[in-house]
Length: 176
Length: 208
Image (cartoon, rainbow over all chains, first blue to last red; front, side, top):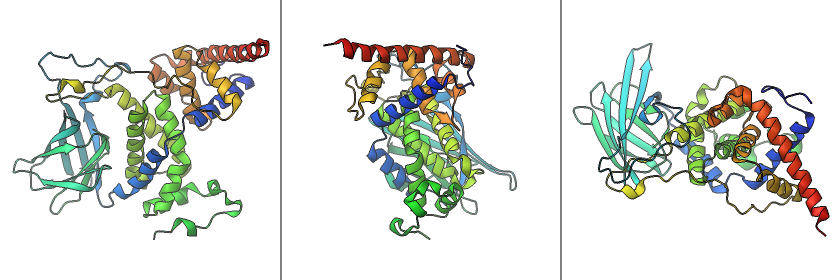
């Protein structure tokens, strides 16, 4: 019997058995109806007029490949672990318009506190959208371009930054 | 213009799968909720299967599922090849699942040490689910006699299929092994599974 290469399909029997396994998992573990319904409803969260700011840095992904079982932070050390740092970047090569949004994410109780900074500085309105809060939450940045959002929900989040005379910019959806 | 679902024309025979993916994507981009629902309906099971194959527990799988669909929605207007929509959605899900695994779903508490994550637990309920088909129940029993490694590998290979081929690269990345080792390992795992299936039948036949 020939050894199956990693790109080969193995024996026909292998194929049949794998297909049976696929059917079994489909029957045993289908997506919950409520979860699928939420995905349908997320259609209302689309942002028609905003440019996309991509996630370019995520401190939680630094040194990726550490394996599936990350060490849990040491209890009782008295020193809180580093908060998570996210950086989003929008750049339009035509207009040279660039926007950086840096966000620090901390857990406070079961919610999240987002401490953000927009560069370059200037007046801007921040709107945070989440599936849990479809109507969005809005704050203004201060004169240094900073903002804080308390009591965000864990889960997907997108921040839209609106500036006078510039296109709205929405961050790539990110799990916080 | 939003087309109510009950007024959408369906191809003869009611087979919605015959509908052009390009048309679905285009309609969804133009604001058609029904087109979006169809896309979610068509690929939702596969996305869920990928989340679970990466050993995310229900709550985390639900988060990655939502996150995947939101990213798909956000990028829908830049889909270049609608025919590869399924593959692109699956790639997005794998990326998000891997990110969740690397993140270890860490929580950095401010003030409440009780919120620190606990170590990963097995994702499957020890009780077998209610399986309608007897052959699936047999297969379930046999499958769960396999080593953790075999179970993990086979699940990754079966549910995460792109254009009819499992994504060995992603499976290798999740398992932390060389891609070339997967074929032989898969073969051995399947041989063992076949043996357990046969033993199960023999055992049942002999138990009288």
